[in-house]
Structure formats: C-alpha cells, structure tokens
Length: 203
Image (cartoon, rainbow, N blue to C red; front, side, top):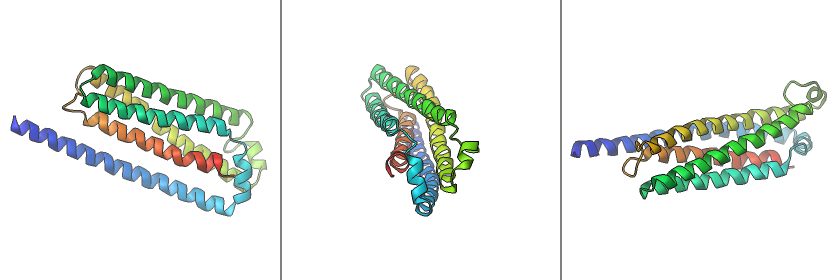
C-alpha cells in the first residue's frame, strides 16, 4: 500500500511538472507571435488601426466573457471532484464544453463574415489594400486560428476527462488529469485575454 501511495504521489508531481513545462513552451510560442505583432504594429500603426475597425468589438467581448466563465466552471469542476461530488463535477465540465462550443460558433460566424466580404489572406480585395492591412489580417487569422485550434484540442480533452470522471477513473484521490486539464484551459483563456485587446481594442 505504501508503495502504491508513493507511486501515486510521484505520478501526480511528474504530471503536474510536465503540464507546467508544456504551458511554458506554449507561452513562449505565443509570446513570439505577440512580439511579431508588436513590431509589425509599430511599423504599420495607421494601417493596423484602420484594419482593426473591420472587427466586431462586441463579438470579441462576448467571447472574452464566455472564456472567463468557462475558466471559472472548470475550476469549480476541480474543486467539486476533491469534495467527492461526481455529478456536480460532470455538470461543470458539461457547462465548460458548451461554452467552448459557443465560442467556436461565434468565431465561425466572425470568420465567415470576413471571408464573405473577401477579407482573408490571399484574397483579391485584401491584395488591393496596403501592406499593413495584409499583415494585420494575416496575423489575425493565424493567431486566432491557432487559438481556435487550442480550443478544439481542449474540447476533446475535456470530453475524455468527463468520461473518466463518469467511469470513476478520476476521483477525489486521483484527479491530477482533471487538474491539468484545468491548467490547459486557463492557458487558452489567458492567450485570448491578450488577443482580444491587441486585435479588437487597440486602434
């Protein structure tokens, strides 16, 4: 029994360390993109300000609120599992999933509107604009697209974790996978908190 407890503790610490290392590399990656954005904006300030007017601030704000609430719900799920409240844990995970899907739906319509108006990388309309606008929308689609990909990955992970909670493979004595999922989701939230003002608010 002591050996098993020791292994559980080791797995817990190792898993947590691995997740923090992953988060660190992700922050470095997006930090590099933010740096590219900052330099590009500095060199094309007027063009970036004009291009930003094409984005819907309300949609961006709604998605920000959605992600903030989803971060709260997944944190509540982690707390609930520690209190041995399996059903409440599953409810909070389900709410997180619904919010994530709503975020992607909003992003789908936002992207769809831009594409419908011919504003996307490589489009004829965008090519007729200046270099600054082309660069702005290139960064916009690349960075928000990568973020959306992280959302999709998060949805898959949360679904898997939910099944494990339902089957009691994740429980009050062994919940590190759920905790790591929460950390990943908070990362997704933090990235968006930076993306929102950079693309939607700074004009």
